[in-house]
Length: 216
Image: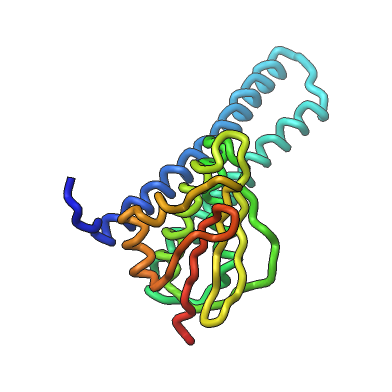
């Protein structure tokens, strides 16, 4: 295996593909709800044609369920659209805390699959100018490490705060975790370098990522 650092473009394409694959699973789940409702609606129509009376309560429950599937799919597509457009600008103003919450939402399905509970600590906004797509990539890699480290039944807590010259993210999978593996990964190092960020161990086995405000 070559020791050459991975190409940044390849790392970003891989990240984009991982996010889109996860989103497509969520869309399929929402469509499954609507597909099931559509089939049930067809059964109701067939029953009505045979003269079987259908109460409004039953139809109402079906309508609510199908509406829920539509709303869920709409929310997923909105998040997908936002993520897709995050690569439009090399640099942009954003809220570090809100971006961390957004990425945690995108990673939620994978966290559940890993058996980990993923939460974001509420806190004040952390406005800054940075490279949005690279920041999202760094957060995604941190969440992937943390959920794997937390394991089945574990809990991952994400927090953001303002520091001099920028902002800081703390991704904590709990006591006993060691972020060395994540920090030593060449793909992670490449993303952090391009982002202009620094990372290191945080309190209690957490991963700390310091992001520079490009306007400072």
